[in-house]
Length: 253
Image (cartoon, rainbow, N blue to C red; front, side):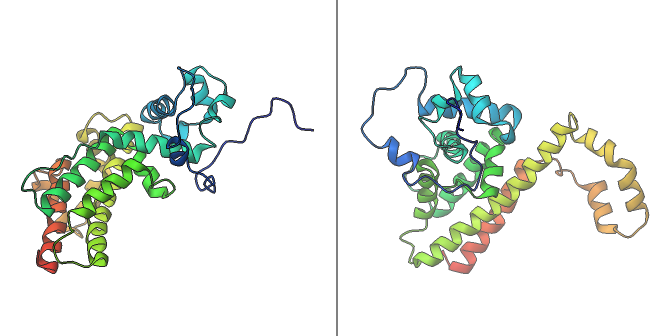
């Protein structure tokens, strides 16, 4: 028999979305809510947990303890983890700061867009993991950033397929670069390395042997002579410029 205090199972990424999304429910006329519990407070608490301990640490039970409410109380606001992740992602994207400026070009917009996404990811590394899972990429604020970047290519004489492909090319670069950068940061954190010198000291013996074989002369020159190998912001900006240069040359814009 079902116990009287049985709780819904934890939702998992990839669960089928609710027939009516959390955003549709939020758009309805507001009902009286408990002052201590709102969609915004739930999202903020979950973001706090994920920022400190990672995405896998977020659970409905842990979140209810963090908020000081019962787990069942949370299910009055979200149907499971899928919706919780949506709220978290949308809350993180509230930090996206990209006003419309007079005289800005499509390249200006896409450059700022990419750097804004990088800044959000560095503050909230779990957002990159969510994007990789591709389960909750559709929220009002996420859609607003897509509209902002896609709209930068509007009015340039491009068909909509070309506009979308160009915008997607920028996003593909951003996602790839951030996956690499965040993965590197997570490795540093997990090994409790304070800086890049700690990493080099850890891998030094292996790298010394490999380079000593003489099979990798160009990489050896890079390792010995590069002066910006730890400058991740410069590397991100350089790669982004290359992508934008390619779009400009290919499309003549």
